[in-house]
Length: 255
Image 1: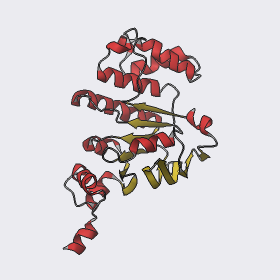
Image 2: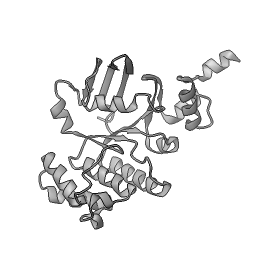
Image 3: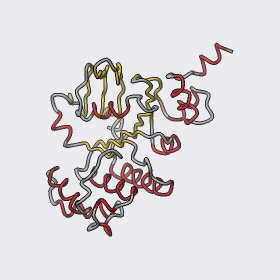
C-alpha cells in the first residue's frame, strides 16, 4: 500500500475574475509521503491547499482524495484530514485546554479528554493547559495549532508555513515533532515553506510553482541536479526570478 496515491490532482485551475491563481496543475501524492508545495509569494501554494481542502471551488479540473471526488465527498474526506497554518487563529480569550476541548467536540472525538491529554504531552503543552491562549509565545501557538490539527487523527495533514516566524531552535523542535509524528503514525503531509533547508530535511518530493503553474517536480536532490544549483535555495531563486527552471540540458545546449 506504500505506493497508493492518496491525493490525485488533474488539470486544476482557479481564476478570481481576470486573475489566474492556479493553472492546469496536475500531480499525485503517495500515502505516507511528505510532499512539498514550493514557490515564491503569489505562486499559488495556499490557493492549491485551499482547493484540496474544498475551501474554494476550482474553475476547472478534478481533485481526488482517498480515491473519492472532493466535490462530491467533501464532508467524508474532511473527517480524515486537517490543517495547521500560521494564518489560522484560535480564540485568544480561551485557555489552551478550552480551545482544544472546543475543537475536539466539533470534530466529534470520542473520549476528548484522553485525546487532548495525549497530544498535549506529545507537543509539550501539558504545563500550559490553563494558560490563556493570547498570552502564548509564537512557538507555543504553533504547537497548539499542531495539537488542534492532530485531534482527529488525520490521515493527511496540510502544513502551510508551520515554522514561519519561529526562531531556529523552536523551528528545529517543531520539525523534530513533525518527523516523529509522520514516522510513527504514517501520516501523509502536504508541506509549504520558504526555508529550503527545512524542505530538504522534511520532504520526500517537492513541486515548484511559479505564477500558478508547475515548473519542476521531483526529490529535492533531483531538482538541485536539474538546476545545476549548489543548493535547493539557489534553484528556488532561479524559479522566483525567471518563473521557470533552467534544466541542465538547456544549459548544455546554450553552451
